[in-house]
Image 1 (cartoon, rainbow, N blue to C red):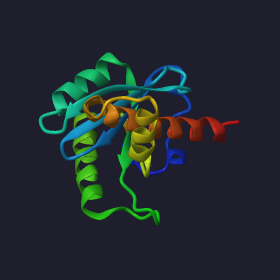
Image 2 (image 1 turned 120 degrees about the vertical axis):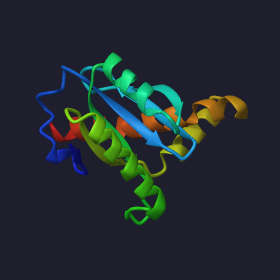
Image 3 (image 1 turned 30 degrees about the horizontal axis):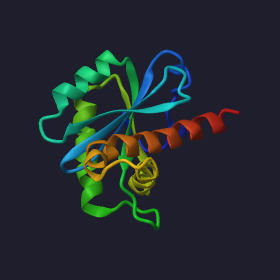
Amino acid sequence: MILSDPRELSISELKGHCRVLCLDYGDKRIGVAISDINWIIASPLKVLASHGVLKELIQTIDEQNVGVLVVGAPKSLSGGNSGKQFEKVKKFANKLDELLPNKKILFFDERLSSVAAKRFLDEAEMTRSKQKKTIDKVAASFFLQGFLDSLNYNSL
């Protein structure tokens, strides 16, 4: 089930029973981040090649006890969907929805997550070659943390 607003999801009963997996979909790579079981902390998990990824992704979802998938929605700075890339992300999410009918999937704004991840890695004095290998999963963890914070803030 694909939804665009976390308030549309009846996911409160899932908290404490499964994890949230976040996907930062790109043409070449997908950054993957995961929450803890209580949906408080997001952690970078891995970076996958975008093509031929579905089998490995489904295996990760099963291994990590994932119940909710958050897919980064590329938005323009004005807040609208950003054209061709959003259509690619939507197509990818629809394929996941077909393969994982019992999982809840939603889009979440990923604006500036890569910029924040780059700044973070620069401040950590990580070399450019290491940054290239990790930036996608760090960006995914940044916007997953934003998603988790919005859920936890709204439930207070």
